[in-house]
Length: 161
Image (cartoon, rainbow, N blue to C red):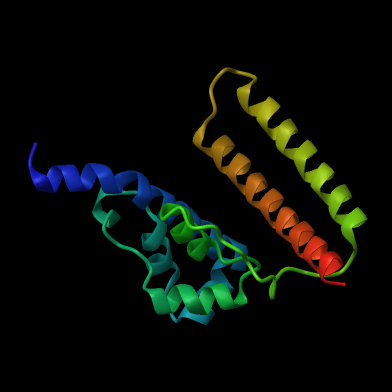
């Protein structure tokens, strides 16, 4: 195996991982808002997360990521980059809504977890998790992650008092 093909094989999982988080970022904002904020067309934004072979080497420029994440509910791509380097990502919560208290967070977490389990149950019913089912599961786990981050921030606030 050549060095080039080895590099492509080792980068493929991280490329797919980054592309899926790029998609989550764009969908979090919505295409219209993402286009307006980034100055890019819907087609260009779509290419940034496309897994089609002709777009395998296309990634969103860092300035565009920064502009979009500034308006998004969560820094999806930045979190993905941290995960790839096994860096603990400690989100400061400037975009995480602070309303409610820990009890509200626990209720929201329970609701999200129940939704995730229902989605999982539906997904494995036929023994195969389709691409769309996997995307729904990923979306729900991202929602759980955001609730956990809010809980963490509330707990940090409580311990700082």
